[in-house]
Amino acid sequence: MKIVQCIFCDIVGKKIPSEPIHETDACIVISDIHPQAPVHLLIIPKAHYAEFLEMPNDLLLHILETAKIVIANRKIAAYRLVNNGKGAAMIDHFHLHILGSIEKERGL
View 1 (cartoon, helix red, strand yellow):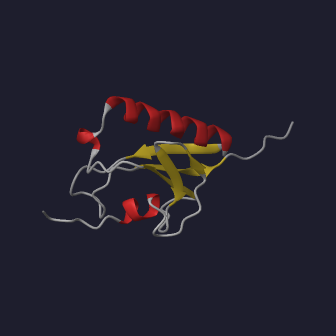
View 2 (cartoon, helix red, strand yellow; view 1 turned 90 degrees about the horizontal axis):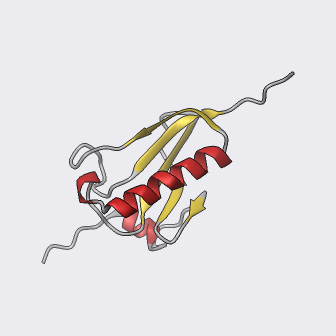
């Protein structure tokens, strides 16, 4: 049996320290260590799934609901959600990127 080392599993399992921005029973949200936007967060399921096509629908829905909560709570503007398919990312553990900017307060 081949054992695959997964950095996201190590983060979820607290073998690698992180500072979750948001956490549920099913996923964590952390900052990307190589941000590609003013706000660059990762939503990572706690269970290991290599890619989007392997994900159970209820977990996908939970991750999208988590994205909505985080975007609203952190006032993220001009955001986009990005997922890479298997082999397209450096890490074969499904994760959803939230990229955006901080919403500016509107003056009257």
